[in-house]
Length: 362
Ligand SMILES: *Cc1c(COP(=O)(O)O)cnc(C)c1O
Image 1 (cartoon, protein in one colour):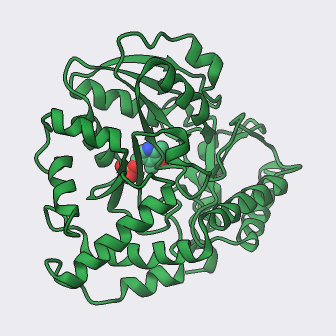
Image 2 (cartoon, protein in one colour; image 1 turned 30 degrees about the horizontal axis):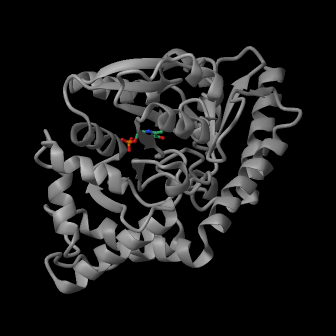
């Protein structure tokens, strides 16, 4: 296998850092021990620090993909008959709405044109009257667009709404501060900028959200947040977690914390800037008006469908990310997460240039 084919230019899973691969070789331990409780307690502390959480906020570690954490949050913080305002500007906003629908939570959509970002103007058009929560995707990873969380936060304060943020595509790629923005539930997962294998997800709950849980009954047994919070007090999870992934998490969070979250985010931003610069002269337009650092969504302007570009790059050993649904033929995405370097960007850009020449000469 060539070196390039081991490099994933996808938003997740991503190319694992060496330290994570090393941690993955450790033998699995038994989890009901004081040593493993210390691991969970340390991970929880790091997760809160990196989220900018307040001292009374808590971080839950769930063995599930990111969607599991999204559904768990809806099942714990909302009840049938409640109303959620949902920002829908792509697949992941749509998914949040579908989860609400599945649990009989009424959805009041804020429809955003794919590629655009939701900001004050879009929020102001939708009444918050009688609603209970705002569900917003920070980085709508299907289009590369970053929604304006400061605007979301202002809107929630004005209307007294819970602020639930899907930060799966942005955590450690774009800055976020839970306490400043008064986020009530911050959701993210292991396989995006955290650069771990898939399988873990996280929900950092505000003190306010934790208070609400006391008054409500969770409609999930496995994801009952009250039970998770109670076990967290002694550094445990209610059920067997993905032990190996938790061990890798401890290693990775320690590394990120030692480097500093800002530095870690700046590296992703630098890779994104570098890649976008390399696209000059190639037949693509940037799709997102306010892009996340995590991903660049590209719209081919040479008349060939996005799927053809993805297939051609794959044949040259480069894994980029196709789109599904309505955008499948018009855009594809390139990720800037995990153990990538400017050198990898250059290899990919050269392959894109070579693919272009081949298409012209064809
Ligand atoms: C990746 C992603 C998800 C889905 O996560 P899974 O781990 O595949 O369940 C949800 N929301 C956003 C914004 C994402 O980027």
